[in-house]
Length: 432
Image 1 (cartoon, rainbow, N blue to C red):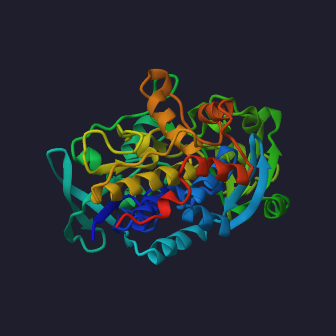
Image 2: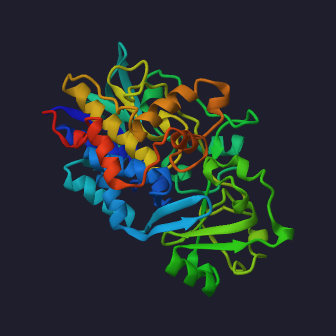
């Protein structure tokens, strides 16, 4: 049977694995940490704004498995918070085992605490990988017909120190498991670094996680019942908008997030700020005992991202490598779990197509996902474009999609658009 190897077990890698498996390949996922999902372990926001449309498009196209897992494990559905509508919040404490079961049930081989130490490449193709097993130190040589680089763009610690506020001890856990393991770069492809508007490099992750029990009983009750809690910040303590400008998640760079503490209930209390000085946070009513859960040093900074993006086409093939595809942040300055999943699905599917010698597929631009994949590629070739971040839920990409009339919340209408594009059930079909 044809084989596809996925490097990186975040949302993008997991989606690529399921997609390639549905297409009829043997699939193995190699993840450097001891759990899957990466930032998905502390994220949790789904279906907000244009992500609703993208989710329903992918469900109609036949590879919405991970969205169904998120729906099943949501603590709250159809909630609103500043700038966002109809959001679902999955439980961060339950989601990783549920995703791992989804992959295992599909027949995907999962290898955690494994790191790529070497790449054999020749004539523009990856021929094999050398894998180091964290617990034993053993080395394994593995080969596949096609590969997906879903290794992300964050870390190592040096980037957080050079471009951010130092290692804030985040969920990436670079000190324990080492830096990311991008295979395309190891095969000689030059990665690209995102810029901010001021010319500085990278972007800071946009939210923190607080221990819910460290907050006032009133805040806890509001979170449990409503899923969201907005707490006004006393005028004397309000931050300037300059901090919001550092965030990867520019959809949250709104005055409401400067004037209020916005919390979301994902099992813990998700604080919609890149970081917040603890001494100031504890002066805000209800936060006298506040304690950070991720990053542990959330009072001084957060993880820095977008240091390892790859050149790619709209079918998500890496330019310069014949048998390698990319997904998630590797495919551009894309922000969010939904964005990672949809690119993962296409990358995994086309990796399988390569393995079977079939023509690569693209998602038509008549659909939100297809338009977004192409729009991001076109946008980031300019200095202005590379300084922006792209998400279905806000900022420049969401504005573009709304202008084109592609933001739809009528599920029947979304399914009809998918059908008109000839994509109904497309990713559910085996190529074998």
